[in-house]
Length: 443
Image 1 (cartoon, helix red, strand yellow):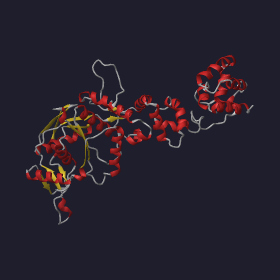
Image 2 (spheres, one colour):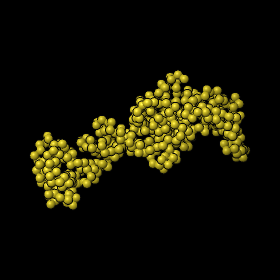
Image 3 (tube, rainbow, N blue to C red):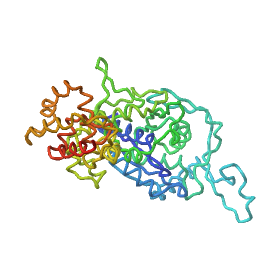
Image 4 (tube, rainbow, N blue to C red):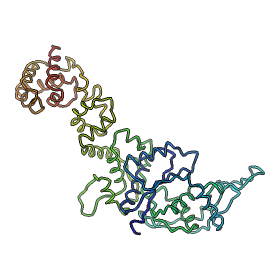
């Protein structure tokens, strides 16, 4: 099939938050379409008016935008009623479907009263074996006899899922249907409808489900699954996309060294359905954290600072900028920063001085000498390397624990903080000397 003819579709139902399973399905459709020079359609399947919510549709669209998954066309099934009605009539006219006096569960609707009217449309199923080729799983066959004459519409006005998706895929020119393996069981009904409408068969690829560590299907009980949750937790979209792409797909080319970090354009260039695995793919929260740490390292200082100030508008950009190198090496996600620099946090000493206790200082015997040494360091030279050089010999002579621990506590009031030389540079000469003087006063 010529690359320019490839059309894929991501067709979520807006009945709940956009989650990682749906995001990976959207991503695989995007990667394949773009790798083939084709296009991706976003189709909101909202024919279930009772369960479909506008807020969930917006959540899906916002999530795709945040992840950088662009689509070329957009449709809502709720706006396509006339199209479906035409095809319901076509199927009835050509004898492939008929009005039934039985409801979906097979009960006789005439029992409801004398003013009944046929309420469902059934597909006339001739039975037999239906087979199709799956790009991931090979040949799959079903005996459709057991399906009976299944319902395809509630009435002449209202299609059900299987009919609507077949009509849409036909009219939108979809060539490849890439979806979760839980969609395999839908395929025989859809193929029967498609054949009755004279539709050329699509190419199918049913990707493995995402599994939790206990090998059950990933769900809310295993922790965050909604894309908005990962966004709130401070994960970077690039990291999440990279992570999702490698769940159930091998990116490694023959003879290549092992590699895991890929930009979205690189993923597009490498994606191949033949390397998607059949079995369920494991979700690892620890691996996602690793990806996020790796991507955090690649952020430019301005990018990281902008991301942090957007999350913490109450914080001084100047203080965040001063702490940036220390923040970068300590956080896994952006959401770790408020705890890190908040009251009692490892980097809280710049914004808030936690006055040290005498007990925590242990000894202040050498603080006067330390203060005297630091007074001799000029303001321009008051940098971590120069401060360390001036104090190191004295600390070695008197015992580093006796000199550097009291200095750390004097400057931060915290048991856990960066080394005292870095702290002194961040505080500046004047504030450093003032804090040492306060600690001395506790004698």
